[in-house]
Image (tube, rainbow over all chains, first blue to last red; front, side, top):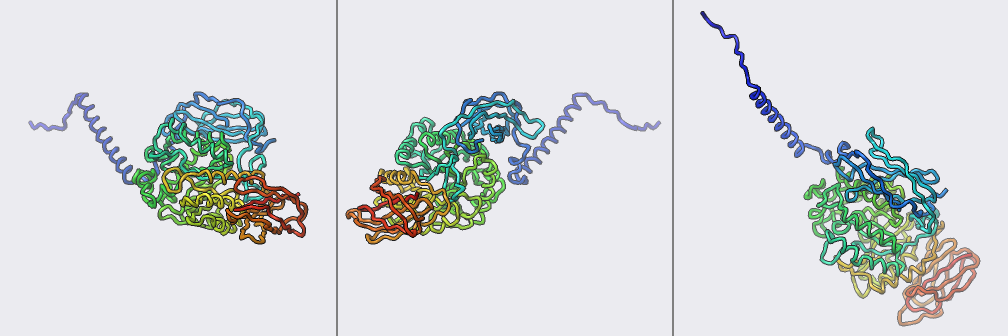
Length: 81
Length: 519
Protein backbone atom coordinates (compact mmCIF):
# COMPACT_ATOMS: atom_id res chain seq x y z
CA UNK A 1 0.00 0.00 0.00
CA UNK A 2 1.43 3.22 -1.03
CA UNK A 3 1.20 5.90 1.50
CA UNK A 4 0.93 9.34 0.25
CA UNK A 5 2.02 12.14 2.60
CA UNK A 6 -0.27 14.92 1.91
CA UNK A 7 0.98 17.25 4.54
CA UNK A 8 2.72 17.66 7.80
CA UNK A 9 1.12 19.20 10.67
CA UNK A 10 3.90 20.72 12.78
CA UNK A 11 3.04 21.76 16.22
CA UNK A 12 5.26 24.60 17.61
CA UNK A 13 5.73 25.47 21.19
CA UNK A 14 4.47 29.00 22.16
CA UNK A 15 8.01 29.96 23.26
CA UNK A 16 9.45 29.24 19.83
CA UNK A 17 6.83 31.47 18.14
CA UNK A 18 7.62 34.40 20.38
CA UNK A 19 11.36 34.11 19.71
CA UNK A 20 10.90 34.14 15.97
CA UNK A 21 8.54 37.11 16.28
CA UNK A 22 11.11 39.04 18.23
CA UNK A 23 13.80 38.34 15.66
CA UNK A 24 11.52 39.63 12.90
CA UNK A 25 10.70 42.72 14.90
CA UNK A 26 14.37 43.35 15.59
CA UNK A 27 15.19 43.05 11.89
CA UNK A 28 12.42 45.49 11.03
CA UNK A 29 13.68 47.94 13.67
CA UNK A 30 17.25 47.72 12.37
CA UNK A 31 16.13 48.36 8.79
CA UNK A 32 13.94 51.27 9.88
CA UNK A 33 16.67 52.86 11.98
CA UNK A 34 19.24 52.42 9.22
CA UNK A 35 16.91 54.04 6.71
CA UNK A 36 16.23 56.97 9.03
CA UNK A 37 19.93 57.34 9.84
CA UNK A 38 20.96 57.37 6.18
CA UNK A 39 18.22 59.91 5.39
CA UNK A 40 19.12 62.11 8.37
CA UNK A 41 22.81 62.08 7.58
CA UNK A 42 22.77 62.42 3.81
CA UNK A 43 19.41 63.40 2.40
CA UNK A 44 17.51 65.59 4.86
CA UNK A 45 17.28 69.21 3.62
CA UNK A 46 19.08 71.74 5.81
CA UNK A 47 17.03 73.08 8.65
CA UNK A 48 14.10 70.77 8.13
CA UNK A 49 14.26 69.30 11.58
CA UNK A 50 14.71 72.54 13.52
CA UNK A 51 12.40 74.69 11.45
CA UNK A 52 9.52 72.23 11.49
CA UNK A 53 6.47 73.58 13.27
CA UNK A 54 5.95 70.12 14.75
CA UNK A 55 8.99 70.65 16.91
CA UNK A 56 7.44 73.47 18.91
CA UNK A 57 7.37 72.87 22.61
CA UNK A 58 3.84 72.61 23.92
CA UNK A 59 2.73 73.93 27.26
CA UNK A 60 0.87 71.46 29.42
CA UNK A 61 -0.12 73.87 32.17
CA UNK A 62 0.50 77.38 33.47
CA UNK A 63 1.40 76.72 37.08
CA UNK A 64 1.95 80.23 38.43
CA UNK A 65 2.16 83.84 37.29
CA UNK A 66 3.91 86.33 39.54
CA UNK A 67 4.19 90.03 38.80
CA UNK A 68 7.01 92.23 40.02
CA UNK A 69 4.67 95.00 41.05
CA UNK A 70 1.10 96.13 40.91
CA UNK A 71 1.97 99.79 40.48
CA UNK A 72 4.26 100.80 37.65
CA UNK A 73 5.45 104.30 36.69
CA UNK A 74 4.54 105.02 33.13
CA UNK A 75 7.21 105.34 30.49
CA UNK A 76 5.86 108.47 28.85
CA UNK A 77 2.78 109.95 27.31
CA UNK A 78 3.04 107.87 24.15
CA UNK A 79 -0.66 107.70 23.54
CA UNK A 80 -2.40 108.96 26.60
CA UNK A 81 -6.16 109.22 26.34
CA UNK B 1 9.00 97.97 33.56
CA UNK B 2 6.26 95.51 34.38
CA UNK B 3 7.57 91.95 34.57
CA UNK B 4 5.77 88.64 34.95
CA UNK B 5 7.55 85.48 36.02
CA UNK B 6 5.74 82.37 34.84
CA UNK B 7 6.21 78.75 35.81
CA UNK B 8 5.05 76.27 33.23
CA UNK B 9 4.81 72.55 32.83
CA UNK B 10 5.88 71.79 29.29
CA UNK B 11 6.68 68.96 26.99
CA UNK B 12 10.07 70.51 26.57
CA UNK B 13 11.74 70.26 23.23
CA UNK B 14 13.10 73.78 23.17
CA UNK B 15 12.43 76.24 26.03
CA UNK B 16 13.14 79.12 23.64
CA UNK B 17 10.20 78.16 21.46
CA UNK B 18 7.51 78.13 24.10
CA UNK B 19 4.59 80.09 22.71
CA UNK B 20 3.56 82.13 25.70
CA UNK B 21 2.17 85.60 25.09
CA UNK B 22 0.84 88.32 27.33
CA UNK B 23 -2.03 90.43 26.06
CA UNK B 24 -2.33 93.88 27.63
CA UNK B 25 -5.18 96.32 27.30
CA UNK B 26 -4.30 99.91 28.11
CA UNK B 27 -6.59 102.36 29.93
CA UNK B 28 -7.56 103.85 26.57
CA UNK B 29 -8.41 100.41 25.17
CA UNK B 30 -5.29 99.84 23.09
CA UNK B 31 -4.26 96.18 22.82
CA UNK B 32 -0.58 95.23 22.96
CA UNK B 33 0.79 91.69 22.79
CA UNK B 34 4.28 90.79 23.92
CA UNK B 35 5.97 87.40 23.92
CA UNK B 36 7.82 85.66 26.71
CA UNK B 37 11.46 84.68 26.95
CA UNK B 38 13.07 81.80 28.80
CA UNK B 39 15.37 82.53 31.70
CA UNK B 40 16.89 79.98 34.05
CA UNK B 41 14.05 77.50 33.92
CA UNK B 42 11.28 80.07 34.05
CA UNK B 43 9.56 82.23 31.50
CA UNK B 44 9.25 85.97 31.78
CA UNK B 45 7.24 88.71 30.15
CA UNK B 46 8.43 92.32 30.15
CA UNK B 47 6.18 95.20 29.29
CA UNK B 48 6.49 98.98 29.44
CA UNK B 49 3.22 100.83 30.01
CA UNK B 50 2.83 104.25 28.48
CA UNK B 51 -0.55 105.35 29.77
CA UNK B 52 -1.66 106.30 33.26
CA UNK B 53 -4.45 104.14 34.66
CA UNK B 54 -5.43 100.51 35.02
CA UNK B 55 -4.09 97.92 32.62
CA UNK B 56 -5.58 94.47 32.30
CA UNK B 57 -3.70 91.48 30.96
CA UNK B 58 -3.95 87.75 30.47
CA UNK B 59 -1.61 85.08 29.18
CA UNK B 60 -2.12 82.57 26.43
CA UNK B 61 -0.15 79.60 25.18
CA UNK B 62 -0.16 78.22 21.68
CA UNK B 63 -2.73 80.83 20.75
CA UNK B 64 -5.07 79.74 18.00
CA UNK B 65 -4.54 76.06 18.63
CA UNK B 66 -7.12 73.77 20.17
CA UNK B 67 -4.89 72.82 23.06
CA UNK B 68 -3.91 76.43 23.84
CA UNK B 69 -4.27 77.65 27.41
CA UNK B 70 -5.42 80.99 28.77
CA UNK B 71 -5.28 82.64 32.19
CA UNK B 72 -7.92 84.74 33.86
CA UNK B 73 -7.45 88.51 33.42
CA UNK B 74 -5.39 90.39 35.99
CA UNK B 75 -4.71 94.10 36.44
CA UNK B 76 -2.03 96.55 37.43
CA UNK B 77 -1.97 100.30 37.75
CA UNK B 78 0.28 102.65 35.84
CA UNK B 79 0.99 105.89 37.69
CA UNK B 80 2.35 109.14 36.31
CA UNK B 81 6.09 109.77 36.24
CA UNK B 82 8.64 112.14 34.79
CA UNK B 83 10.05 109.44 32.49
CA UNK B 84 10.47 110.80 29.00
CA UNK B 85 9.67 107.58 27.14
CA UNK B 86 11.13 106.00 24.03
CA UNK B 87 13.30 107.88 21.57
CA UNK B 88 11.88 108.31 18.11
CA UNK B 89 12.66 110.16 14.93
CA UNK B 90 10.92 113.52 15.01
CA UNK B 91 7.90 113.79 12.76
CA UNK B 92 8.61 117.50 12.30
CA UNK B 93 12.17 116.97 11.14
CA UNK B 94 13.28 113.48 10.22
CA UNK B 95 16.93 114.28 10.86
CA UNK B 96 16.59 114.59 14.62
CA UNK B 97 15.23 112.63 17.58
CA UNK B 98 12.65 113.33 20.23
CA UNK B 99 11.33 111.52 23.28
CA UNK B 100 7.74 110.36 23.46
CA UNK B 101 6.95 113.36 25.65
CA UNK B 102 8.10 115.71 22.90
CA UNK B 103 11.44 116.79 24.39
CA UNK B 104 14.35 116.70 21.96
CA UNK B 105 17.00 114.00 22.30
CA UNK B 106 20.32 115.34 21.08
CA UNK B 107 22.64 112.40 21.39
CA UNK B 108 26.11 112.75 22.87
CA UNK B 109 27.79 109.39 22.47
CA UNK B 110 30.86 107.22 22.61
CA UNK B 111 31.81 103.69 21.61
CA UNK B 112 32.54 101.16 24.29
CA UNK B 113 32.11 98.07 22.15
CA UNK B 114 33.02 95.47 24.75
CA UNK B 115 32.46 97.25 28.00
CA UNK B 116 32.48 94.06 30.11
CA UNK B 117 35.60 92.60 28.54
CA UNK B 118 38.48 92.19 30.96
CA UNK B 119 42.22 92.00 30.52
CA UNK B 120 43.36 88.52 29.59
CA UNK B 121 39.82 87.25 29.38
CA UNK B 122 37.85 86.91 26.20
CA UNK B 123 34.64 87.60 28.03
CA UNK B 124 33.46 84.05 27.76
CA UNK B 125 33.08 82.80 31.25
CA UNK B 126 34.26 85.18 33.92
CA UNK B 127 32.06 84.86 36.95
CA UNK B 128 29.13 87.12 37.48
CA UNK B 129 30.58 88.62 40.65
CA UNK B 130 33.50 89.87 38.57
CA UNK B 131 31.12 91.50 36.20
CA UNK B 132 28.97 93.20 38.76
CA UNK B 133 31.92 94.61 40.65
CA UNK B 134 34.20 95.23 37.73
CA UNK B 135 34.80 98.62 36.23
CA UNK B 136 31.94 98.72 33.76
CA UNK B 137 30.08 100.96 36.12
CA UNK B 138 32.93 103.46 36.27
CA UNK B 139 32.38 104.24 32.60
CA UNK B 140 28.78 105.04 33.36
CA UNK B 141 29.80 107.28 36.23
CA UNK B 142 32.16 109.12 33.87
CA UNK B 143 29.63 109.24 31.06
CA UNK B 144 26.95 110.77 33.24
CA UNK B 145 29.41 113.22 34.78
CA UNK B 146 30.47 114.42 31.31
CA UNK B 147 27.05 114.69 29.71
CA UNK B 148 27.33 111.54 27.58
CA UNK B 149 23.88 110.08 26.98
CA UNK B 150 24.58 107.28 24.49
CA UNK B 151 26.95 104.30 24.36
CA UNK B 152 27.40 101.91 21.44
CA UNK B 153 27.99 98.31 22.56
CA UNK B 154 28.49 95.11 20.56
CA UNK B 155 27.12 91.60 20.88
CA UNK B 156 29.86 89.42 19.42
CA UNK B 157 31.85 86.25 20.01
CA UNK B 158 33.76 87.81 22.89
CA UNK B 159 31.09 90.01 24.43
CA UNK B 160 27.43 89.49 25.33
CA UNK B 161 27.67 86.32 23.27
CA UNK B 162 24.25 84.84 23.92
CA UNK B 163 24.37 82.36 21.01
CA UNK B 164 27.69 80.59 20.69
CA UNK B 165 29.24 77.40 19.44
CA UNK B 166 28.92 76.20 23.03
CA UNK B 167 25.21 76.82 23.33
CA UNK B 168 24.66 75.75 19.71
CA UNK B 169 22.27 77.52 17.37
CA UNK B 170 18.87 78.36 18.76
CA UNK B 171 19.95 78.01 22.38
CA UNK B 172 21.10 80.97 24.46
CA UNK B 173 23.63 81.56 27.18
CA UNK B 174 21.48 83.00 29.93
CA UNK B 175 24.48 84.14 31.97
CA UNK B 176 25.53 86.30 29.04
CA UNK B 177 21.95 87.51 28.79
CA UNK B 178 22.02 88.43 32.47
CA UNK B 179 24.96 90.74 31.71
CA UNK B 180 22.85 92.63 29.23
CA UNK B 181 20.14 92.95 31.89
CA UNK B 182 22.80 94.48 34.11
CA UNK B 183 24.01 96.76 31.34
CA UNK B 184 20.50 98.13 30.91
CA UNK B 185 20.24 98.64 34.66
CA UNK B 186 23.39 100.76 34.44
CA UNK B 187 21.94 102.65 31.49
CA UNK B 188 18.82 103.45 33.45
CA UNK B 189 20.72 104.39 36.60
CA UNK B 190 23.04 106.79 34.77
CA UNK B 191 20.60 108.01 32.09
CA UNK B 192 22.67 106.66 29.20
CA UNK B 193 20.96 105.21 26.14
CA UNK B 194 22.23 102.05 24.46
CA UNK B 195 22.85 101.46 20.75
CA UNK B 196 23.05 97.67 20.66
CA UNK B 197 24.95 96.00 17.82
CA UNK B 198 23.66 92.51 16.96
CA UNK B 199 26.43 91.24 14.69
CA UNK B 200 29.93 92.25 13.64
CA UNK B 201 31.96 91.43 10.56
CA UNK B 202 34.74 90.29 12.88
CA UNK B 203 32.87 87.03 13.46
CA UNK B 204 32.23 86.56 9.74
CA UNK B 205 35.59 87.39 8.28
CA UNK B 206 39.14 86.27 7.85
CA UNK B 207 40.40 89.84 8.17
CA UNK B 208 40.94 89.60 11.89
CA UNK B 209 41.85 85.99 12.65
CA UNK B 210 39.59 83.09 11.85
CA UNK B 211 36.68 83.69 14.15
CA UNK B 212 34.19 82.39 11.64
CA UNK B 213 35.63 78.90 11.83
CA UNK B 214 36.87 79.14 15.39
CA UNK B 215 33.96 80.72 17.24
CA UNK B 216 30.93 81.23 15.04
CA UNK B 217 28.02 78.81 15.57
CA UNK B 218 26.75 79.59 12.06
CA UNK B 219 29.94 78.13 10.53
CA UNK B 220 29.67 74.58 9.25
CA UNK B 221 32.90 73.82 11.11
CA UNK B 222 30.91 74.34 14.31
CA UNK B 223 27.82 72.49 13.13
CA UNK B 224 26.14 75.52 11.58
CA UNK B 225 24.60 75.86 8.14
CA UNK B 226 27.12 78.21 6.48
CA UNK B 227 30.12 76.93 4.60
CA UNK B 228 31.25 80.48 3.86
CA UNK B 229 30.55 83.69 5.82
CA UNK B 230 28.57 85.15 2.95
CA UNK B 231 26.16 82.20 3.11
CA UNK B 232 24.77 83.81 6.26
CA UNK B 233 22.81 86.29 4.15
CA UNK B 234 21.06 83.72 1.97
CA UNK B 235 20.93 80.41 3.82
CA UNK B 236 17.35 79.87 4.98
CA UNK B 237 18.38 77.97 8.07
CA UNK B 238 20.78 80.73 9.08
CA UNK B 239 18.06 83.34 8.61
CA UNK B 240 15.64 81.26 10.63
CA UNK B 241 18.09 81.08 13.52
CA UNK B 242 19.07 84.75 13.48
CA UNK B 243 15.41 85.72 13.47
CA UNK B 244 14.92 83.47 16.45
CA UNK B 245 17.87 85.09 18.23
CA UNK B 246 16.61 88.57 17.46
CA UNK B 247 13.18 87.52 18.69
CA UNK B 248 14.75 86.58 22.01
CA UNK B 249 16.47 89.97 22.14
CA UNK B 250 13.24 91.82 21.39
CA UNK B 251 11.25 89.82 23.93
CA UNK B 252 13.85 90.30 26.66
CA UNK B 253 15.14 93.83 26.10
CA UNK B 254 12.71 95.48 23.70
CA UNK B 255 10.74 96.80 26.67
CA UNK B 256 13.47 99.29 27.48
CA UNK B 257 13.24 103.00 26.59
CA UNK B 258 17.00 102.98 27.22
CA UNK B 259 17.51 101.07 23.98
CA UNK B 260 18.16 103.89 21.54
CA UNK B 261 18.41 101.74 18.42
CA UNK B 262 19.06 98.23 17.16
CA UNK B 263 22.15 98.10 14.96
CA UNK B 264 21.93 95.01 12.76
CA UNK B 265 25.59 94.91 11.74
CA UNK B 266 28.85 96.52 12.59
CA UNK B 267 30.63 97.22 9.28
CA UNK B 268 28.74 94.63 7.28
CA UNK B 269 30.72 95.23 4.08
CA UNK B 270 33.74 93.54 5.68
CA UNK B 271 32.00 90.16 5.85
CA UNK B 272 34.19 87.96 3.66
CA UNK B 273 32.86 87.82 0.13
CA UNK B 274 29.87 90.07 0.83
CA UNK B 275 28.47 92.56 -1.67
CA UNK B 276 25.60 94.98 -1.22
CA UNK B 277 23.45 92.58 -3.24
CA UNK B 278 23.97 90.05 -0.43
CA UNK B 279 23.42 92.15 2.67
CA UNK B 280 20.73 94.54 1.47
CA UNK B 281 17.94 91.93 0.96
CA UNK B 282 18.96 90.41 4.29
CA UNK B 283 18.63 93.79 6.01
CA UNK B 284 15.21 94.35 4.48
CA UNK B 285 13.96 90.95 5.58
CA UNK B 286 15.34 91.23 9.11
CA UNK B 287 14.16 94.83 9.57
CA UNK B 288 10.67 93.74 8.58
CA UNK B 289 10.89 90.92 11.13
CA UNK B 290 11.92 93.39 13.84
CA UNK B 291 9.15 95.84 13.03
CA UNK B 292 6.60 93.05 13.27
CA UNK B 293 7.84 91.96 16.70
CA UNK B 294 8.95 95.19 18.40
CA UNK B 295 5.78 96.83 19.75
CA UNK B 296 7.81 99.83 20.89
CA UNK B 297 9.15 100.72 17.45
CA UNK B 298 12.85 101.22 18.18
CA UNK B 299 14.88 102.67 15.34
CA UNK B 300 17.05 100.39 13.21
CA UNK B 301 20.50 101.15 11.86
CA UNK B 302 23.51 99.35 10.43
CA UNK B 303 27.05 100.36 9.62
CA UNK B 304 29.71 100.09 6.96
CA UNK B 305 33.45 100.18 7.36
CA UNK B 306 35.51 103.34 7.45
CA UNK B 307 34.57 105.96 4.84
CA UNK B 308 32.35 103.54 2.90
CA UNK B 309 29.12 104.85 1.44
CA UNK B 310 26.63 102.44 -0.15
CA UNK B 311 23.74 104.60 -1.26
CA UNK B 312 21.18 101.82 -1.65
CA UNK B 313 21.85 100.70 1.91
CA UNK B 314 21.53 104.21 3.31
CA UNK B 315 18.36 104.87 1.34
CA UNK B 316 16.76 101.52 2.15
CA UNK B 317 13.61 101.48 4.27
CA UNK B 318 15.39 98.92 6.43
CA UNK B 319 17.68 101.65 7.73
CA UNK B 320 16.16 104.39 9.88
CA UNK B 321 19.47 106.00 10.84
CA UNK B 322 22.27 106.61 8.33
CA UNK B 323 25.54 105.74 10.00
CA UNK B 324 29.07 106.53 8.81
CA UNK B 325 32.40 105.40 10.22
CA UNK B 326 35.58 107.33 9.42
CA UNK B 327 39.17 106.90 10.48
CA UNK B 328 41.75 109.43 9.33
CA UNK B 329 44.81 108.57 11.27
CA UNK B 330 46.86 111.71 10.79
CA UNK B 331 44.13 114.29 10.43
CA UNK B 332 44.16 115.76 13.92
CA UNK B 333 42.12 118.94 13.76
CA UNK B 334 41.31 118.46 10.05
CA UNK B 335 38.64 115.88 10.90
CA UNK B 336 36.08 118.71 10.69
CA UNK B 337 36.73 119.11 6.96
CA UNK B 338 36.34 115.36 6.46
CA UNK B 339 33.02 115.31 8.27
CA UNK B 340 31.80 118.37 6.39
CA UNK B 341 32.32 116.59 3.08
CA UNK B 342 30.38 113.55 4.25
CA UNK B 343 27.60 115.24 6.18
CA UNK B 344 26.70 117.74 3.47
CA UNK B 345 25.74 114.76 1.31
CA UNK B 346 24.32 112.39 3.89
CA UNK B 347 21.88 114.82 5.51
CA UNK B 348 20.12 115.20 2.17
CA UNK B 349 18.56 111.74 2.60
CA UNK B 350 16.17 113.17 5.20
CA UNK B 351 17.16 110.62 7.83
CA UNK B 352 19.11 111.14 11.03
CA UNK B 353 22.83 110.92 10.31
CA UNK B 354 25.22 109.60 12.89
CA UNK B 355 29.01 109.33 12.77
CA UNK B 356 28.99 105.98 14.53
CA UNK B 357 32.77 105.60 14.82
CA UNK B 358 35.76 107.87 14.40
CA UNK B 359 39.12 108.15 16.10
CA UNK B 360 42.87 108.06 15.84
CA UNK B 361 45.59 105.87 17.29
CA UNK B 362 48.07 108.77 17.47
CA UNK B 363 48.25 109.66 21.15
CA UNK B 364 49.22 113.29 20.62
CA UNK B 365 46.23 113.85 18.34
CA UNK B 366 43.52 112.05 20.29
CA UNK B 367 42.34 115.06 22.26
CA UNK B 368 42.12 117.53 19.38
CA UNK B 369 40.78 114.90 16.99
CA UNK B 370 38.00 114.02 19.41
CA UNK B 371 37.18 117.63 20.25
CA UNK B 372 36.95 118.69 16.65
CA UNK B 373 35.11 115.56 15.56
CA UNK B 374 32.30 115.89 18.06
CA UNK B 375 31.90 119.67 17.73
CA UNK B 376 31.97 119.69 13.95
CA UNK B 377 29.47 116.82 13.67
CA UNK B 378 26.94 118.72 15.75
CA UNK B 379 27.58 121.99 13.92
CA UNK B 380 27.24 120.29 10.54
CA UNK B 381 23.75 118.92 11.14
CA UNK B 382 24.31 115.41 12.47
CA UNK B 383 21.65 114.11 14.85
CA UNK B 384 24.19 114.29 17.64
CA UNK B 385 27.85 114.08 18.36
CA UNK B 386 30.13 111.73 16.48
CA UNK B 387 30.89 108.63 18.57
CA UNK B 388 34.60 108.42 19.27
CA UNK B 389 36.08 104.93 19.32
CA UNK B 390 37.56 103.96 22.66
CA UNK B 391 38.69 100.61 23.96
CA UNK B 392 40.47 99.47 27.07
CA UNK B 393 41.59 96.20 25.51
CA UNK B 394 42.01 94.47 22.14
CA UNK B 395 43.17 97.32 19.91
CA UNK B 396 45.51 100.28 19.81
CA UNK B 397 43.02 103.14 20.04
CA UNK B 398 43.16 103.29 23.80
CA UNK B 399 40.67 104.34 26.38
CA UNK B 400 38.90 107.63 26.93
CA UNK B 401 41.19 110.28 28.41
CA UNK B 402 40.28 113.12 30.73
CA UNK B 403 40.71 115.61 27.89
CA UNK B 404 38.33 113.63 25.68
CA UNK B 405 35.75 113.45 28.45
CA UNK B 406 36.11 117.20 28.99
CA UNK B 407 35.37 117.92 25.35
CA UNK B 408 32.20 115.87 25.64
CA UNK B 409 31.20 117.81 28.73
CA UNK B 410 31.63 121.16 27.03
CA UNK B 411 29.60 120.00 24.03
CA UNK B 412 26.84 118.53 26.20
CA UNK B 413 26.41 121.86 27.96
CA UNK B 414 26.17 123.66 24.64
CA UNK B 415 23.49 121.34 23.21
CA UNK B 416 21.48 120.94 26.40
CA UNK B 417 18.72 123.26 25.17
CA UNK B 418 19.00 122.71 21.41
CA UNK B 419 15.82 121.78 19.59
CA UNK B 420 16.07 121.21 15.86
CA UNK B 421 12.78 119.37 15.64
CA UNK B 422 11.40 121.82 13.15
CA UNK B 423 11.43 121.77 9.39
CA UNK B 424 13.74 123.83 7.25
CA UNK B 425 17.04 122.96 8.92
CA UNK B 426 19.90 123.94 6.65
CA UNK B 427 23.63 124.70 6.65
CA UNK B 428 24.40 128.07 8.21
CA UNK B 429 25.70 130.75 5.88
CA UNK B 430 28.67 132.30 7.65
CA UNK B 431 31.70 134.36 6.66
CA UNK B 432 34.56 135.38 8.93
CA UNK B 433 36.58 138.54 8.63
CA UNK B 434 40.19 137.72 9.43
CA UNK B 435 41.94 135.41 11.86
CA UNK B 436 42.34 132.26 9.75
CA UNK B 437 39.23 130.90 11.40
CA UNK B 438 36.83 128.38 9.86
CA UNK B 439 33.11 128.34 10.68
CA UNK B 440 30.69 125.39 10.61
CA UNK B 441 27.05 125.84 11.41
CA UNK B 442 23.42 124.83 11.08
CA UNK B 443 20.38 127.08 10.92
CA UNK B 444 16.70 126.38 11.59
CA UNK B 445 13.74 128.74 11.73
CA UNK B 446 14.21 129.64 15.38
CA UNK B 447 17.78 128.59 16.04
CA UNK B 448 21.24 128.85 14.56
CA UNK B 449 24.44 127.28 15.91
CA UNK B 450 27.91 128.09 14.67
CA UNK B 451 31.28 126.67 15.72
CA UNK B 452 34.44 128.62 15.01
CA UNK B 453 37.74 126.74 14.98
CA UNK B 454 41.35 127.04 13.84
CA UNK B 455 42.75 129.52 16.34
CA UNK B 456 46.25 129.39 17.76
CA UNK B 457 46.21 128.21 21.39
CA UNK B 458 49.00 130.66 22.22
CA UNK B 459 47.49 133.77 20.63
CA UNK B 460 44.31 135.54 21.65
CA UNK B 461 42.13 136.59 18.74
CA UNK B 462 40.39 139.95 19.12
CA UNK B 463 37.87 141.90 17.10
CA UNK B 464 36.94 138.97 14.87
CA UNK B 465 33.81 139.77 12.89
CA UNK B 466 31.26 137.05 12.09
CA UNK B 467 28.71 137.62 9.32
CA UNK B 468 25.69 135.33 9.35
CA UNK B 469 23.03 135.41 6.66
CA UNK B 470 19.99 133.39 5.55
CA UNK B 471 18.32 134.19 8.88
CA UNK B 472 14.79 135.18 9.82
CA UNK B 473 14.64 138.94 10.29
CA UNK B 474 13.85 140.32 13.71
CA UNK B 475 15.17 140.35 17.25
CA UNK B 476 17.70 137.70 18.23
CA UNK B 477 19.46 136.46 21.34
CA UNK B 478 23.19 135.85 20.97
CA UNK B 479 25.16 133.54 23.27
CA UNK B 480 28.92 133.04 22.95
CA UNK B 481 30.38 129.83 24.41
CA UNK B 482 33.89 128.72 25.23
CA UNK B 483 33.95 125.45 23.29
CA UNK B 484 36.57 123.88 25.59
CA UNK B 485 35.04 124.83 28.91
CA UNK B 486 31.43 124.77 27.81
CA UNK B 487 30.70 127.99 29.65
CA UNK B 488 28.96 131.11 28.46
CA UNK B 489 31.39 133.91 27.70
CA UNK B 490 28.86 136.59 26.94
CA UNK B 491 25.20 137.13 26.06
CA UNK B 492 23.70 139.98 24.08
CA UNK B 493 20.73 140.92 21.95
CA UNK B 494 20.75 141.87 18.30
CA UNK B 495 18.68 142.51 15.23
CA UNK B 496 18.62 140.61 11.95
CA UNK B 497 17.94 142.97 9.08
CA UNK B 498 17.42 141.71 5.57
CA UNK B 499 18.26 138.18 6.75
CA UNK B 500 21.77 139.23 7.86
CA UNK B 501 23.58 140.07 11.05
CA UNK B 502 27.18 141.12 11.73
CA UNK B 503 28.57 140.09 15.11
CA UNK B 504 31.80 140.84 16.92
CA UNK B 505 33.21 137.75 18.60
CA UNK B 506 34.58 138.07 22.11
CA UNK B 507 38.35 137.46 22.45
CA UNK B 508 39.23 133.75 22.19
CA UNK B 509 42.11 131.42 21.35
CA UNK B 510 41.41 128.00 19.77
CA UNK B 511 37.69 127.95 19.22
CA UNK B 512 34.35 129.47 20.01
CA UNK B 513 30.72 128.49 19.71
CA UNK B 514 27.79 130.73 18.98
CA UNK B 515 24.09 130.17 19.49
CA UNK B 516 21.52 132.50 17.94
CA UNK B 517 17.90 132.25 19.04
CA UNK B 518 14.97 134.03 17.44
CA UNK B 519 11.99 135.52 19.17
